[in-house]
Image (cartoon, rainbow, N blue to C red; front, side):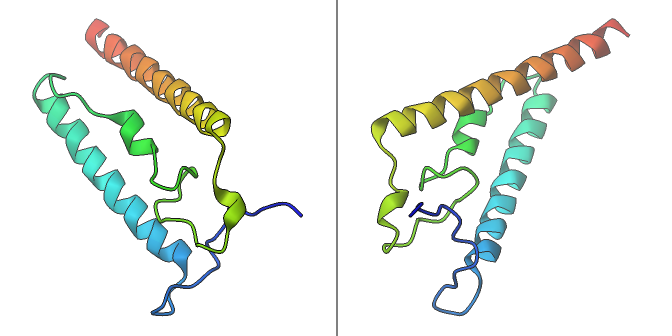
Length: 110
């Protein structure tokens, strides 16, 4: 049987779906990152925004900010799997940064 990494349909002890709790955490982190980007833009890009740190989650599962349930023994990744995910996240961040640089250069040329 294949192990699942989708725990959104589970419920916490108060009866809320974990998907909704996770979405609240994700939204809060996005707002914090947005504020950091705005502060960096106001200061001329001198503040360093940790894009990679924002993508990493405690569970190691992309976009899952809660811990995985204890009954899901297969959700733990091997070191090889963790390194692969980290490389994918780094590649994604580099792509974002290059796009932002292109937009910034285009604005400067105008």
